[in-house]
Length: 224
Image 1 (cartoon, rainbow, N blue to C red):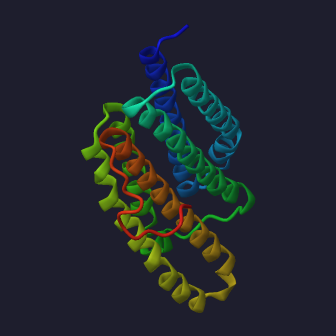
Image 2 (tube, helix red, strand yellow; image 1 turned 45 degrees about the vertical axis):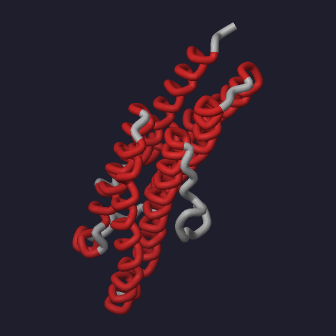
């Protein structure tokens, strides 16, 4: 029988694998959208099964860890946090899938000037940077690194709030492009939700490392 420490290390490696896979999905969805690359978008869609399969594997392994070792204290917090982190990462993968599906279904490149006004690339890059930070925090068990994502999430929220006004102005100028504007707004909302999921993960890492529960310590909207 595998001992507790070996089993925990194995679970952590699977968690890192999930981080890597979901980051690749999110990055590919960004490149697919900006370059209007249907082939890359299709690649994201086809890789969704890998995300789902790993999600189920980690969930089963967490249950097995609890059943075999009856963990307490930091080991229990680790496995409880990992289950929630795994769930949130799978949702990040879902949003990358949704963005890529838009690209495949709506065969219309978006004007670059509009993307600049919406700060689209800046928002996407901030989300990827948050994902990098939180993966390092998980790998290195660094609660301070995890806290860095909260500030970056404020940028995503700011861009998201401004997007509605920008899109309203553009629709008035050219109502014929309303489908394209609605598509952009939907994608921006998905990126904003990715930021929310990453902050959820940060809270779980801090809970695991420091036994500090953050989700009731500040006003928040519902999990997305």
